[in-house]
Length: 265
Image (cartoon, rainbow, N blue to C red; front, side):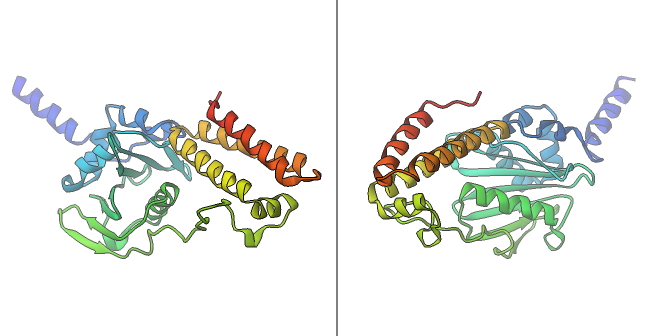
C-alpha cells in the first residue's frame, strides 16, 4: 500500500501543471518577488521551460524585481534580474488559457528564449510583444536571439521582431527631449538655457531610475502622477514669467529635492 501511495503521489506531482494554470493572474500589478516566492511558481517555470534554460530564468527572477504584469486578462509576465548581477535578467511569460509558457534570459545583448509548449517557428505573438516591451522598458540593446525547444536544441531567431524600436538619444548636455519638436515657451526656454537643459536631462534620468526601482505598478503610477503634476505647475508658473530661464532654474531645483525625498503613499 505504501508503494502504491508513493506512485500515486508521484503521478499527481508530475501532472500538477499538465493543464493551464490561472492562479498567476492573482499577482497582477504586484511585485514579481511575490509571484516567484509562491511555492507553485518554480514548478510552473520548470514545467514550461526546457531544462537547458530553466535555471537561468529562475536565477533571473530571483533578484530585484519588476512589477508582475497581466495582459489581455490572460497573459502573465514576470521579470527581474539576477541578485548582485542585475545586468543579467530573466523573464517568464505564461498563457493562462493555453498553458504555454516561455522563458527568457538576457545577458549583454544576448537573448535566449525557450519553451516546451511552442516552437521557434510558431512563437506566440503576445509573448514576442511582451519580450520586446520588456527590453524596451529596460533600455536594453539586442545583438542575438536564440530559441531552445522542448528537445533542448538551440536555433537562431531573427533579432528585428524582438528589438526595441529606435528612441531619441538626448545630447550630453540635455535636455531630455528633442528640441526640434519644442512647441511651447517653456520648452524653447529649456532648449536655449544650458543650465536648465542639463537639469532637465538629469531629472529625466532620475525619474526613470526611480520608476525602475519600484516593483509594483501602483508605485510606478504614483511616481508618474507626481511628476506630471509638477510639469503642469512648472509650465503654469514659468510661462508668464519675465525671465523664464531663472524661473525654471528654481523649479527644477525644488522638484529635485522633492524627488529625493519622495515615497509612494
